[in-house]
Length: 475
Image (cartoon, rainbow, N blue to C red):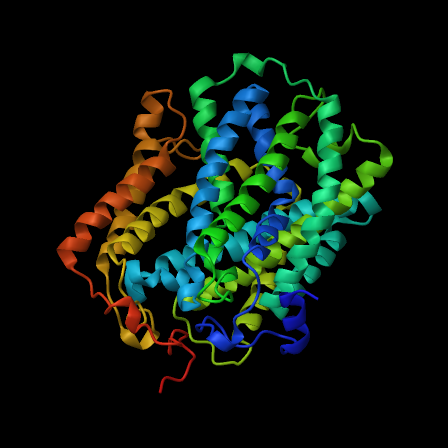
């Protein structure tokens, strides 16, 4: 029996509490469980669509598309590995750790953004793809299929961390095998040497594809330490980084490659991607692939709802119930169901924009938290992150807003808005890159201007950080 499975049988059925620090007595698990944790949620149809967009919408050849997909995914997986190493030291969730860069009040903005993107946005996207797959497989009404998918997703997230980890582990085995067979089948029918329609978009298509791939892979970044915070503080950081980063990278690239290859098959339609993807498969493989798409949606959204609830609480909102995390997760599931239901009639048309918008805020947030962590090296944060500390750091929120606004204003390349530079020159979408660099640079300067409070030597970190959750009683 694995550590996570054994703990699940001994722990309360529903994980209690909210975002409080995990004490040493409750730490368990292996760092390599993170490989499965970040593999399973990417083994879903939304990943396949990213690869398809590169060929169908951004008009790249298969091999050029793969180069852009590898670049964007590698950057997102790299930061996933780095951020995952932060969890075990204090036993804190990612958006709680973000308080050092933004302050208790300033952190409300990134926490709110991640709450909306994770608990509602991604939840709706994945639920819709899973519902279409289940409906195609069984012939049941799409709304009924959506309800079934959502109920299972919410149930896993409601119970909490240990069930999420166990579910992701076993889902990664099943989904990995099915999607590997499906990918091989797709490649036997693909035309990898096909010329892009209209000659391709060149550099523009390349940057758009890389940005979309980064947005997808880095979309998990604000969740990273949520699933490593239960590991013992002595766990090897190198192992954590490799396990989380590789799990994210390998799973994304395999399915993105399948999506790009499927898009080279005659008759592929981006407005009907599920049927187009499985149309060339033998019946048995087709049916198992549809099952995998539905299960993959559940694997992804178990994390989205769980971490969406964590981000909601990290904003400092007081929910005075013992099962506050579980209750918030249930609330997101109900709201997310209705959002997904409303999207059934027009699913997929805004997916490209959604991926880029995710990258627009995550990239500057990443630049800020990485620079903040570097500037705080060797110091403890236990005296800063508790809710009662009333810690302020205006450098973070100013950097996020200024860098985000400038990068979008100049470089955004969306259907609803094209930036000044992007409109004048064929550069595609460099918003995430510019946002990351600019935010990090501005924060570096403002950190020295505002001189936010630093903690003492890291050796003074207490065994348990008290008062992180707004609903905790502080002694």
